[in-house]
Image (cartoon, rainbow, N blue to C red; front, side, top):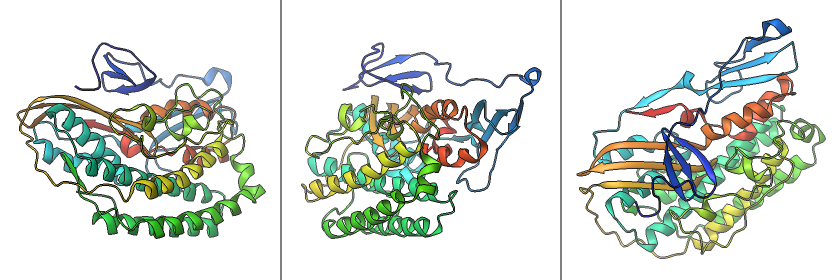
Amino acid sequence: MKHYKFGEARGRYIGPAGDIQVYSEGLVRGESGFRKERHDHEHDGQLWFDYGPSTGGMLESVGISFLTPGELISETLVDPSFKKRTLVVKGKSVEDALLTVERINGFHAASHSIAYCSAVEDALGINTDAGTRSSRIVMLEMERVRSHLEVIKRLCEPAGFGVPHSQIGYIRERMSRLISSVSGHRYFFSANSIGSAAIDSKNLLGETEAIGAEFARVYDGLLQSKIFLNRLQNNGRNEDGQHLIGPAARACNRRIDARLDSPSMDYSGAEFEVPVAEEGDSFARFAVRSGEIMQSLSIIRNIAEGPEEEGREHDTGGSGEGAARVESPQGDLFYYVNVRDGILEDIRMLSPSMVNISSFEASMKGNIFTDFHFNWESYGIWISEAGVEFA
């Protein structure tokens, strides 16, 4: 591995990838004791209310339980294993495994495929050209824009804001069509391969500017709505953000971002600053994501006219260990692979959604049931990424 070594707990702690503890500058083997268990509270007049596994308005099924005396929430447990999926990729060629990996979460297919491909390239000693690296940054930022638009759209739904909900859905559709025009698929499927990225990132300037201007108008309108703001402010407050990554951490004034500290993707030419907020509540997470939409559109315009990919073929029949980390729309996404003669022998993934679940649980304390959907959507948690194991 070029950038990581086992046995070194260096840099910021990110989270567990199976039995691997991931730090920004090192890896340590060992379990984390990541999940807490449900315990009996009948003696104090409270009960566990099973809100999941499927609730109206949510995008995915998930097991959720609230400890409550009636309306106030004392404790929350999220069980992502309710939708647990076992994906068979070990024993496949690294190319065949990619077809499964990029479909873990279609909304974040570029993030997963780029992180996985980068880990395999690290294992096999494959060096990508400048055009591939530039194209992958464009893909990540386009995906970030669409993912954040989806989160903000879903924040409008429980507020009954049908007009901005539809407006943002339309903007998201424009971005999906733009993605399709540059990659050949609305979700970047098959746009990445080991050692290369097949997209045409030219002529993005006009459409990205139009998308940014249209979103800015809707965002300004939402900021004028006291009803909308009242549902977000002080909802799901997380004071310190110590166990968070991604936009949820940056909403707690933690300036952490894999684009700043991961050697897997070089953003040195992107010219951007990380948006942060201080409140640590649902509104802060909404504001950070909105800022990142405009920031990502700017990054795309800055580098979209970069060098073209050279189109070289790469030998994928080698052996080795590799690791890579990218900033997906929800935070640090990490992959570790062990490859022997081009066959995937072992794979580990760290999902930002899994890391952030425990902080979401803590942030629900003191809230009421009607606060739940706003808080949940503001975290942008994807159970499709959290409830996954490889075999």
